[in-house]
Image (cartoon, rainbow, N blue to C red):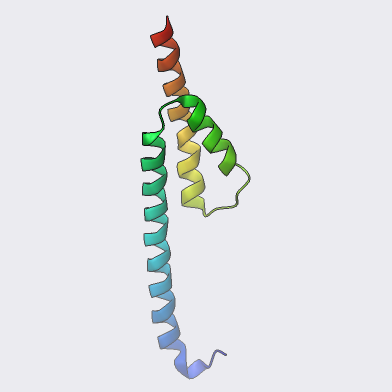
Length: 84
């Protein structure tokens, strides 16, 4: 239970928690980037994005996944161009 006399310790602990969350977000964004870079087809990338669509995530991770739609469409365009 929170005791006012421990307010400074609480603030320090909370700052450490926020730092850990930022580091975790950065690691997740890096993992997302690496995972999508390893996919061989835009179809596979689109399927992976759809699997993440209904999962609640932190804002930074949601934003990173949103950016991947553009990457998938660019990849699809390149795949179609290679077929011609």
